[in-house]
Amino acid sequence: MIIATNVTKQFGKLTALDNVSLSFNKGQCISLTGPNGSGKTTLIKCLLGMVVPDSGFITFNQQNILHHWQYRSAIGYMPQIGRYPENMTIAQVFDMMKDIRKSKTGLDEELIHKFKLQEISGKKMRTLSGGTRQKVSAALAFLFNPEVLILDEPTAGLDPLSTELLKDKIRLEKEKGKLILITSHILSDLDDLVTEVIYMQEGALRFHKSLEQLKQDTGQTRLSRAIAQVMKTN
Image: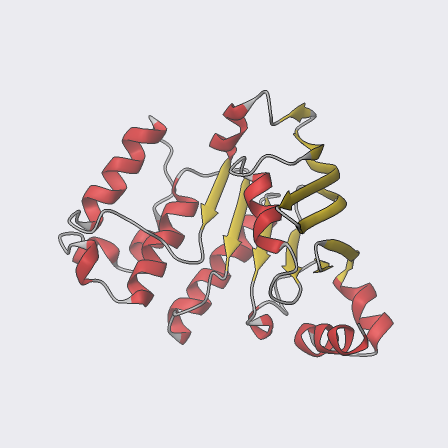
């Protein structure tokens, strides 16, 4: 579905991505992990077309994304920190995104209702707590029923109930055959979601393997402990 081939990106003397090749397939929930500065954010920005690689290329459904920008409509993106017009209400933000996407039918509004955002839709974005902003970002990511979901630290700032509601939604979309890519430092939240793990360090891909294989290789039963052992070894 998405294939990155020999992707390299430098910012001055810093090599953010070093000849990275990866494939992401439908029906997988993939954890993208690694230390701070490992290249995770740059990789996500390349997948979204926000950063253009210096060399290598990325294809979406066998088309080079450099020449077929329309692929973005098939992706739902939840940023780590959602930035919205501060004077807009929650309802106005959703309406704005519907206008931008030119889509007002076939919408997936489950999280809007699960998070009860319709009850506070008149509140302005500047008045919202960090957790409520996260709920807005999550609901927007799923709203247009995308084939691919890229979620950056999705549970950060969410209360336990909201975290479980979001995890249930992720699980449901995975069962529908969608591709879900998650970056998170709260690995304990991902144990019952993730099917594959990508580990990056210093801009390079260290491994891409199934969660079960990672557990066998490390002798650990939890993702957080397995990754901790990998980081300690490296």
